[in-house]
Length: 86
Image 1 (cartoon, rainbow, N blue to C red):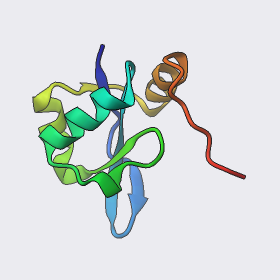
Image 2 (image 1 turned 90 degrees about the vertical axis):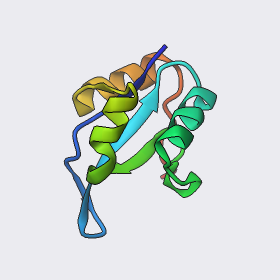
Image 3 (image 1 turned 180 degrees about the vertical axis):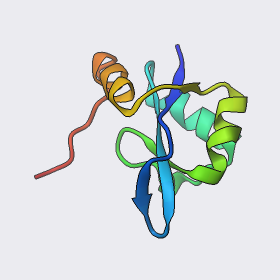
């Protein structure tokens, strides 16, 4: 049971972003995001987009730092990965 975050290496809207996921449930992820102060609009189907300035706060709250590849692997193994519509 954990929440994971990858490094803020994803550019968008003039900022760098991280992705934050749970390996247990979306409920765990939403609860963690609420504690972090992430708005509901930051949820993108199976993860939260977290701006670089909130990265350290997420880690301080207990998010585990992993690579982007590891984050996707854990999300997929948990059965929580949702593919974007094509």
